[in-house]
Image (spheres, rainbow over the protein chains, first blue to last red):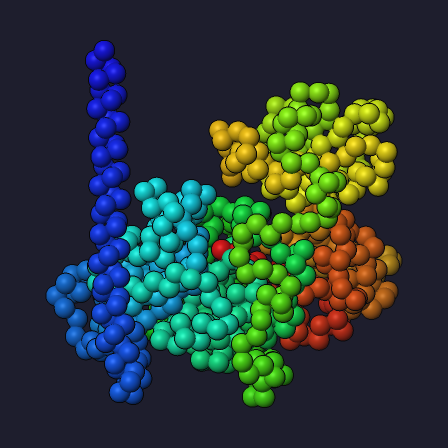
Length: 453
Length: 101
């Protein structure tokens, strides 16, 4: 009896706390919107009178406050940084594009160091699969815009940092407008089209671009469009083939790896703003986390005939980058469609008609993913083993039976179609189907308790 | 008197190794009687050690867009690209560029 009373008390308290938190978030959101509308109105007025804003904040600080001195004392005593460095940082504005694994740590160090103004761009919302690397977001802010969520965390860290949220996707039509007001831009994005877009816009607006990227156990970092250094297009005049590009959602990534690169993006931004040290322009830092090796390699300087940053650019306005790259600018599911619906199998149909009967269910995900969760009937044959026919050794006997239905599945229903295509060529008489939407569809339509990753 | 040899080191980074049997570093001993340019080296790699889909490494006799080639830690574009002639103990590094964040 005692136990259950404690339990229900606990449940009630937890619920009340959650409600209070939600109410608090809502009030804070209202306050921010109010402040934004006020500051936007003042800014528009300044623009009307022809005041070309150097930073989104307006007034230039020429002195440090006592609070500044106490808060930043450990970096103020660095001879190369000092009071002048701190003032430059206080008067600076940095735009961070992407509040993910790179953007969170970068923003954290910039806000903590006393950067006066941060702009945060992200169209996406916080979800649980973010937390392991996107360390500004928290459980109670699931579903909130990532930019807003980051702002809450950053203001707790340093209330003096003025933060402007741009909770939208960066497009050719809004990029110039958003970027214009900032001194330095951080590329913390996760896709090729946005990387070209950011680089082109930064060349046009003459902004240094601190570019970071990470995948699995590897990271890369460089600064584009700084001094005589190259722009993104000087190094990559032609986009990579789409099939050679993997994002963190598909390839995986360790949070400490994005954290390493993101923290270094903040460092390079601070060096650019303060004018200290040797900025990583014309060089590329590559980080191999698995052996903990950093390499600093010399890359080319500006390409004399670069379409973008040379004296005679061929590109003079922003273009359609998704079309240029043949890729989407989001990591949201872009389903493969190899077959018409009547040649495929929905999870409901599989559940109703096939699951209880003899059949062969092949899960084509990599083994590491299969170990996370799997349907009880499934055998794991990773896609590579389907494509190189090594599965025949294991399943050849079973596949002699033409009457045995063969169902292939994966995480979201893309790879399984490729596997079906391959299997049908070898076994044209068999009933071979892919499971539409894969395990994600299984969770949403059949078993809500099946884990999603 | 042995036949002349050209020893070089090949390295792969940020996923490029996945196309070459997941080996990140190889010490190669090439036939020193012939001249080895990067162009010859790419052909040799295709014939001998490229294990996965070749189109993810090569396109029209050169390295596909998105893979950087470094010779002794310097961008190959500064050294003549395909025409660079390999020297003893050269280190050739192939890096896939990353786009995730």
